[in-house]
Length: 354
Image 1 (cartoon, rainbow, N blue to C red):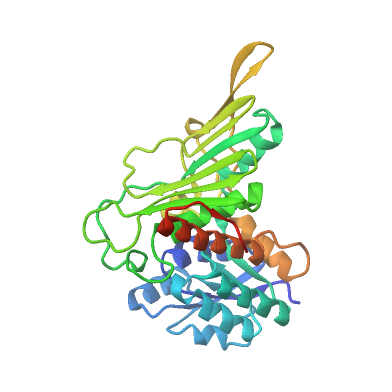
Image 2: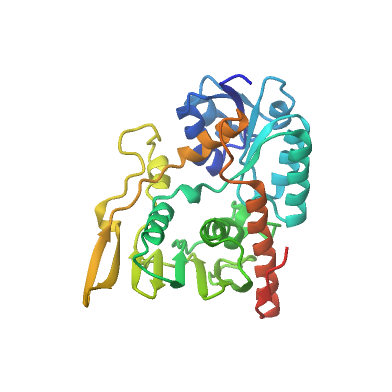
């Protein structure tokens, strides 16, 4: 296969503008050939930022183009299944925004189709490439904490007022904070520990204004000897630690979110010097006992590298590397979401089952 992949981007909302197009443009192994959006204002913006890409009004103009090798799907959650299926049937490799699909049955169908078509299918679980996630991996691998007993991870925001135009805040399949932010935390936990044995979940609505979907979640994933709590809310004015991890020998605490998203929104690009490097003020620390003394050690954050997700997908398409974010793993995330909703509705802990 040719070394430069002609790429089509479906959707130019937040995902397309912030998390997809800048990384395709920065990687010489891709050519951003087409962008589809039905929004006139976004079409004008896309044409001004990416003048070498054709801007079209319909995703079908990307999927039906024989020169397109690779399709990025940044459309709303309700259309992930439809456009991924169409792209795979058209012989295109696909990277779809998270959540992979709305249901695990849809995910199963797409995985089987990609295998039948001999195509690469991956999901944009970019938070595996956060500085925080990679720093946690470093801490766990160091052994400083000893046997783990508990981990708590937060993905919090402050947004009191509802956004009438936001589909994520409407009662649609796959809407709400849990599918949006929870999917990130679940995938990262699966990357660290694999599938849980049991699931406990609380989904609630806190903000005023008639919001019809949840805006706060607390998910507990149970493992033998280990409790993992994943939390997200929209009314967190002053954030606490993002990561808190307890072990027999010590504790790891880290404040502050990965800096890449804010850098992208400020107009920075991933090929700039110093990309993804966190300021020292949000580095984490480990407190542990050594030789009868309590020691606190600052842990420098690993750089965040969202670009590695894209380069890995390209290498997998070219047969040069194994895919990191496998669709089967993303399917497990969706299955956990389904079981978590069951837990919340029944007010019971449920056993994980595929």
